[in-house]
Length: 254
Image 1 (cartoon, rainbow, N blue to C red):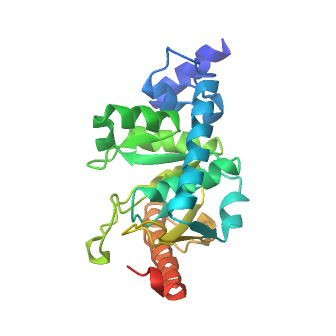
Image 2: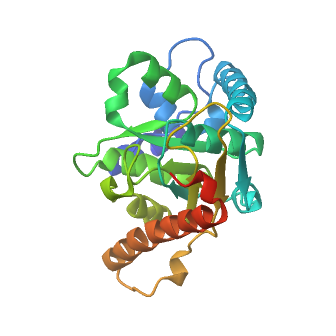
Image 3: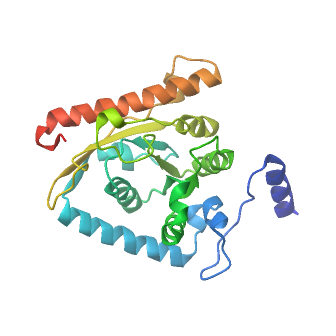
């Protein structure tokens, strides 16, 4: 009866009902992975994640030596958060996912739905906790998934620039992440990196984590105004951290 009530309530809200533990080898849809807690993923997916994480950690450390400054701000905070960053290369999310997974933090990548056109990319993203968002419109299904994940204590990794940026002048910031955070009453954590735009063998990458931005810190009082303020402040702090890194590591300035 309790399960039926949960499913009925979720259906009325247009949300997916809790799935419980997923099957190890078959019987799970992509939506099952998108809507389930990462702690409920089958052991096969967790084994895959461990293999991917430690292989990527070893490979990236050797090929592109990298470090995360103020890492304690990222790994010691166990709350569900929306983590935002500038986007320089496909290596960017790997570094953050690897760091968080090794610290016991479940980090889900919110990726653009265009990647789902590549079957292997969709399969892999789903198994490591990612879910797609349609950037062409307000994707309420993705927003609801984000809220549920944050309320479970999972973190979301979002790149508001939407795509890799090779020139600062070309950056276009997309909204949406603040609404996801607001609905779950979750903080937004800015992070920035330098050195990843034009990767060469043994080129260094430096990442720096910033302090999470709490909703109570905002000056705006109305919900829509708070979202707009968080959208502005979040990326302003990302770019401020990036500029600090460029000053500290001028040799990595692209």
